[in-house]
Image (cartoon, rainbow over all chains, first blue to last red; front, side, top):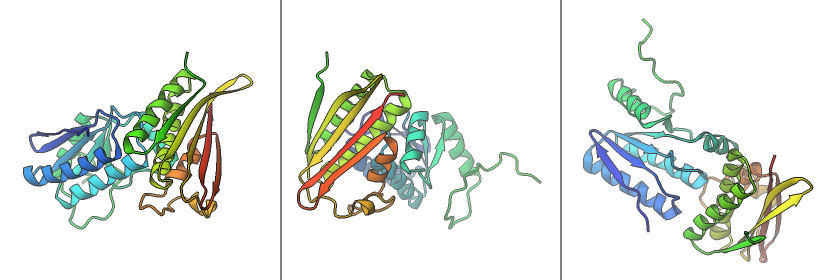
Amino acid sequence: MDRVPVLKIGDLLLVSIQIDMEDQVALQLQEDLADRIVATGCHGVIIDISALDIVDSFVGRTLATIASISRVLDAETVVVGMRPAVAITLVELGLSLPGIRTALNVDLGMALLGRHREQPEPAGMETEDEADIPAVPAS
Amino acid sequence: MSPESQRIEVSSDQDVVRVRQLVRTVAVAVKLSLVDQTKLVTAASELARNTLVYGGGGSVEVVRVENGRRAGIRIVFADQGPGIADIDLALTDGYTTGGGLGLGLSGARRLVDEFDIDTAVGRGTSITVVKWCR
C-alpha cells in the first residue's frame, strides 16, 4: 500500500498528496499525522492538495477529521492548493469543508499559520472565522 | 481505438481508484470540460465506493454515448447487494447507514446530467448516470 510522506520543516509538518489515494491510504495518513504531531510537537500542519484532480466526500471528510484531530493536539491545519474545478465540484457535492482553513498555496498557508501563532485565538473556540484576522487591527 | 464499453469489477479500494482513472480517461477522450471531468470523476468515485461498501462489490461499466450532435459518457454501477428500501430517504443530503457524510448518492446526482436508480430489496442496485458535453 502507498503511504503519503509527512515532512517536518521547522515548526511545521508538510504533507503533499501526490497520488490518487485509496481510502485506506487516506486513513493511514490521518494516523501518521496524529503520531507525528505528538512526536514532533509541531503546531502547524500544511496539506498540499494541488496534485489532486478530485476530492470526493471520503477525502473531504478525512481532511476535516485531520483538522479536528490536529486541533485537539494543539496544531492548526491549513489545506492549500485546491484546484478551481475541485472547489466547484466540492461545493456542488454539498461539502464546503467547514472547520478547515484553506490557503491558495504553501507560502500563503505558512503565512496564515504564522499569524495564527502570533495572535492565538481564545481557548474554547467553537467555530472558525471565515475572515482572516486583519494584519493591522483597527484602533 | 478504444472499445465502446469498458468494465471494471469492484471488490476493493484499489478498484475504486481504477474506476476513477478509467472515467477520467474516457472523460478526456470525449472532451468534457475540465470542470465537467472533475464532476463526473467525483460522482463516479462516490458511486463506486457505494457499490463496494453498501453493495458488497459489483461492477462498473463505462460507455461512450452520442445523442445527435452531443457526445457523452454513460456509467452503470451495479451490485447484487441488499438494495435500497427507501430511495427518497437514501437521496436525502446527510442520510447515511454507513457512517459516512450521507452525501455520496445525493451529491453524485447533482454532479451529473442524468441519474437513474433501479433497486429492489434483496436483489441489488443499479445506478446509471450520464454526463453530456456542453
